[in-house]
Structure formats: C-alpha cells, structure tokens
Image (cartoon, rainbow, N blue to C red; front, side, top):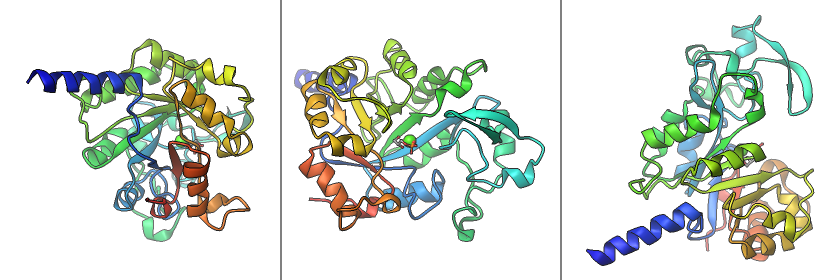
Length: 304
Ligand code: G3P
Ligand code: CA
C-alpha cells in the first residue's frame, strides 16, 4: 500500500515537472491523420488512432460564445464553406502579420459554426464532416491516445473577452485530464507559439507539460536561449529546419531536461535528401535524437 502510494506520488511529480511526458519515441498526429483526411475532423482523429498515434494534436480556437473548438486557422474560410453560408460576415483582420478579409472564428457562435461543411474542401467524400469542439475531441480520444492541444494565435483575443488559458484549464478539469486523479491512458501536453501564453500557463501551475513552439524565423541559436525556458516549459517544439541546421539544439534542450518535438514531417513537405517521409522521421528520431515528431502521416511513422 505504502509502496503503491510512493510510486504514484513519483509518477505525478514527474508528470508535473514534465519529465515523464514521453516514455518512448513518440508519434504526434498533426491535426489528426491530416494527409489522408480533412484536418481536425473526427475522421482525421479516428484515422490517426487507427494508424497508431500516441498523441492526437488539436489546434484550439474560441467561438463567440466561449466554446473551445478544434481549428488551425484563426478564420474559417480555408477549411469550410463559410463564405457561401455567411457572405456578409467577413471583416478586415491582421492575422500573423498579414491584413486581409477574413471570417474570424471568434465572430461566430458554435451553432453557426456547426452549420459549416469542414470536409468538402479536402475531398467531396468528407462532405458531412463538421468542425468539432474540444469536448467532442476528448470524448472520441480519451482512453485511446494522448491529446496535444495548441493554444492557437492567442494574440487574436487581445481586446476580446476571452480568457484562453483559463478555458483550457477548465476543460482539462471537466474531463479529469489533470491533477492526481488524471486518466493515465490520456496524457495531455499543451503547446503554444505564444511566449506570454506559455508564461501564463506556468504561473497558473497548469499541471501538465507545456511545449513552446519555435517558428523557423526565430533565432534560437545558443544554449543560453534554450536554457532561458527551463522551468517555464517542459519541452520545445521547433520548426524541423531549426534542428536540421543545428543538431546541437537537441543536446542543449536535453541538458536542461526539456524534450524536443519538431514539426511537421509530412508527405506535403518532403525535404530533398530523404527517400520518403519514413526516412525523414528516422533521421530526426534516431540520428538527431529528438523525442517525438509531429507528422501528417501517422501510418509512415518508423516503429522499431
Ligand atoms: O503545433 C505544432 C505545429 O502544428 C505548429 O504548426 O501551424 O501546424 O500549428 P501549425
Ligand atoms: Ca499546431
């Protein structure tokens, strides 16, 4: 009894500090099995699990009525028929530095969003797929794989009444996905490009590992820059080119107890020099020594 309690306490402590986030080379299905099904639909998540994903990624956005949904872009037009159903609802937005006409998800209620077709843009055979809520994603995945939610474009909500980090924390509590009673079959790792968001999650003592994403344009070229994130996040998620150009990145992160999960290895962006996407994943995992990879192609993940 005492021994079990000690083991449980050790596991929880490790999870809180992030050290136990991966127990093996790990497959994160990027937006689900998004090479073969429309990203962030139940079809993509189901296929990812059927193809052996250890974690299924969600990009999170917040609707006008405060519901977490799974959507990569801040706006709806790339992956749905919003333009056809709501032609007058576009606004001019500056998103990730580009000003354009956009149908911002945060300007639509969940009921409106549920009217949209989120599958046909990918292939007409997915016509009935819908944008899913985070609750629906958890209901599908819980007990079968981990979830890897990204707090996407947090800067979009500046000046809007959205408490993104608190919404995510409440959702984890509601589904029993953090704390000592968290479901061990459903590990959670949060991720964000937003430095302020990462710091806020640390201040909140969110209780699950957090990965800071690093875009290709970022200058992360010294051990000191990596070390600066120790104790704030438990892992780094660099654009894959960062690790390819500088293999020391992995050494620096590991020296500080942080994991490395590069993005995105995909048949849609196969880098020259690799015979196929499996060879590319092999290189990152076993030559460069990263801990996990984001991939659109879970079926191509090299299992040893
Ligand atoms: O979250 C890892 C990777 O997904 C970051 O890129 O743009 O696909 O969210 P993005
Ligand atoms: Ca993402």
